[in-house]
Image (tube, rainbow, N blue to C red):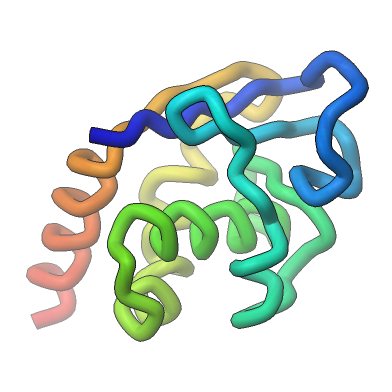
Length: 115
């Protein structure tokens, strides 16, 4: 099981690939989640963020789904819905945690709602 953790206003230094804006950092089992792979698929933002329904949360949603689902097409198809349901609801200046199991369950629910 993977645990994803959002850290608001992380201490510096941190890897430059994590978030160009420098306000949010996302960890996967304690290791930084790079933004690069998700930006190669869809460049919403230069950094991850949460707590609203903008480009940074869209980039984070895509990165989380790519990592948790291991299915590029499904991640792209669901990331905006996941953003609105989950990422935008997290408090903007606070941390959060979610597991890959929870992500997959939410994605299953989102797909069922589309039917």
